[in-house]
Length: 135
Image 1: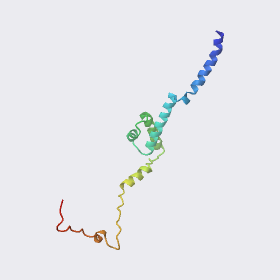
Image 2: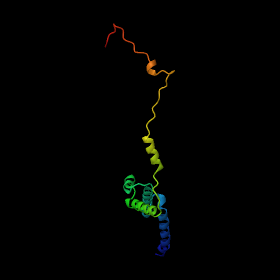
Image 3: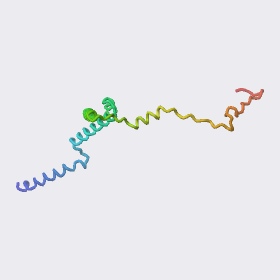
């Protein structure tokens, strides 16, 4: 019986050491994962508000993020921007993409040979001889 008493603290120490290495085995701490998802959602919401997106657009663009966290981030950024009189900063990439889409495609210009157009230099089609058979 006394032998078991000596092994009990060693067994407890081994259990603690094994539990601390669970992340290396791929077992994640649920509290840590929840905190990361919350922080990511807040960052997404704040970024959407700073870019001038509505909360509905933010939800539809980030359907995998936690909606409550996205809303909290959006609301916090909205309050911060209102109190500091900061305007929304629309994305420069979206504006550049819109500008490219609205520009007409360049029309290739035919090279003229010595001032004549291609239609003037083309030879007329030759007619078939009168006795040729038609298939």
